[in-house]
Length: 248
Image 1 (cartoon, rainbow, N blue to C red):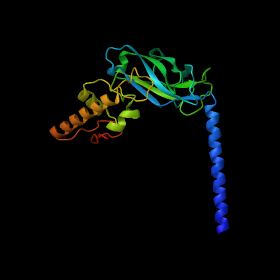
Image 2: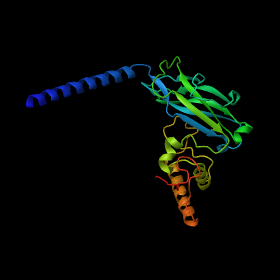
Image 3: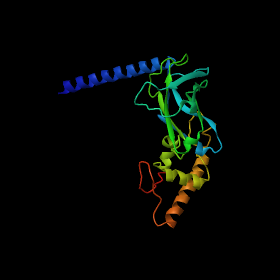
Image 4: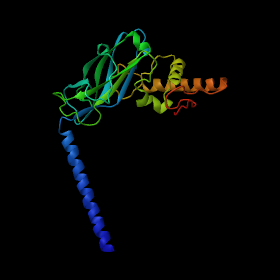
């Protein structure tokens, strides 16, 4: 029995050694190459309702490289996904334009820019289209991870692009009523908080500013629940009919 245990122990050590060597080799190979690039989110939503008066706006879908950084700015190409029946595109082509992307020098994060145009039908319509990263001179390998993002845009109330990335970890599930409540409580049309996003022009809010808004929302929700016969509930979304719960 002792001999068997020694053999099993030896085999385990050999296996761990092989795995460690393989991982080291894989990591070395990945970071010795030009790497790959991928979207850090599978969807991105935008509403002209949150930006009153804008007729045209440019969104920047976040991307990240897998591999080593470069001392030079690197460019990313993207195109409409038109050959996949599971990716239905409803947006008229005249209402958007894919501009391409960039990863700044010495950075892991970047973005792909897309121009969106306002139209009257957006007041009661949500359009969607899908774009994917394709091979370019700077990033020939685009097979790693997620290279497709679904873009939704409208002039109606819609879940903001940063909800699943950050806001949900503080304010729970999204619903139209809850989002409207948050905006009324904070007297804002948007909450531009997305730490680590390369698009700091759009997502500029600091931790401190967001924490202050959290306090305001908590107090306002508490007051609402104390002064109404029933607590605030979700009118749609995954928690439809349930009481709104703040997570943090």
